[in-house]
Length: 240
Image 1 (cartoon, rainbow, N blue to C red):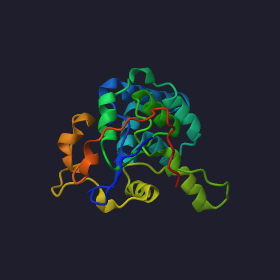
Image 2 (cartoon, rainbow, N blue to C red):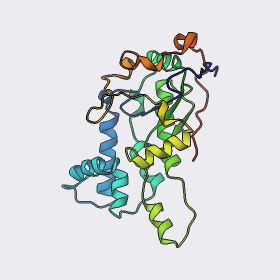
Image 3 (cartoon, helix red, strand yellow):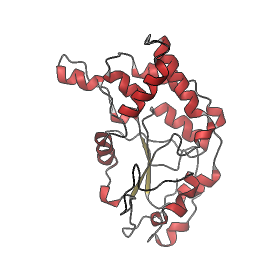
Image 4 (cartoon, helix red, strand yellow):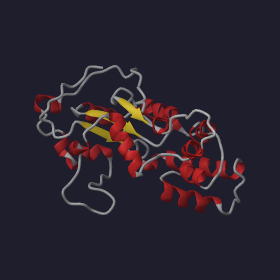
């Protein structure tokens, strides 16, 4: 892919993008299908009482960032890859369509762009491929990046780390992403006026230019440049 020339005068040098329900709308139904699969996994593979599953699924998500992380914290033992295969492998990816408007918008941004998702690598690649955004990002920080496999050991501390899942929105996960992506946290998008939950709120990712014009500030001629690139480029998972 041809790259946008970067300038030290840019206010921000790297943009981390969430993926699910961000690069595509919640109305797609993917989120609902994912939650349904998680609940089925809890019911049929972890033998959790059916009447408890819906509330437990939501409560763990709110407390731990993902239901999966919460289940691990409660002591449920299961294979991470098999969980992801069950939950994500059966999603209706066909509802996601190429988004040329978003593609051009992303390619006009002169900064490095990295996906930061709690999802697994295979899921991230499928989503970006369906959206036609595979070559718009430098790499992916995903489940495998934040939770690399540990060597078998009898050490209690290592065993505890192996059972605990690192994920957003924990501060530790954010710090790990900053380290892994090798970015300057002082050069990120923000606002001097804090509000509950977020600095900015967008109804759609397509409104990002209006909501955050500072992304393109001081970008010179490259700020408006649309890049023609090969969408078949493979994404690189950013490793810790």
